[in-house]
Image (tube, rainbow, N blue to C red; front, side):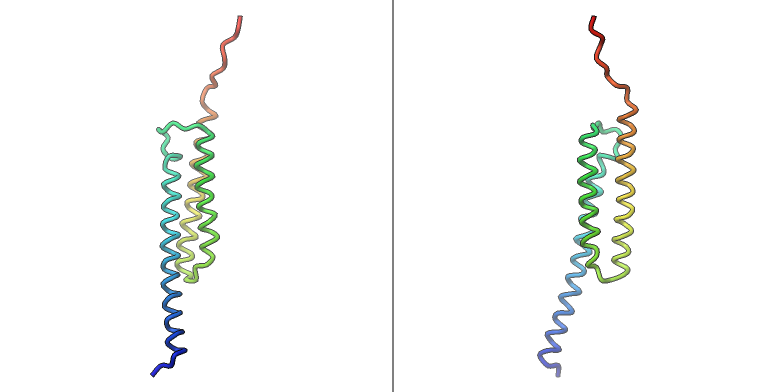
Length: 117
C-alpha cells in the first residue's frame, strides 16, 4: 500500500502534467491571436496607413515575444519544438507582411500641395 508521500508525489506529478498541457494550450491560443492581429496586415485590399501597420506589427511582436518567454517553461521537447517553430514562422510572416505594407505605402505617389501663385 502506498504511503502518504508516494500519494502526494503522484498527485504533484499529475498536476504538473496538467499544468504543462494547459501552458501549451494557452500558448497555442496566444499564437492564434497573433495570427488574427496579422490578418489586416496581410490583407492588401484593406486600406491602412503606416502608423496603423506599425501598431499591428508591434502588437504581433509583443505576443511573439511573450510566447518565446513562456515557451521556455515547456518541458516536453516535442511540444517545445512545435511551439518554437510556429513562433518562428509567425515572426517571419509578420516581418514580411509589415515590410510589404511599408513598401506599398512608400510606392504610393505623394500628394504634394499645389503651387501657390
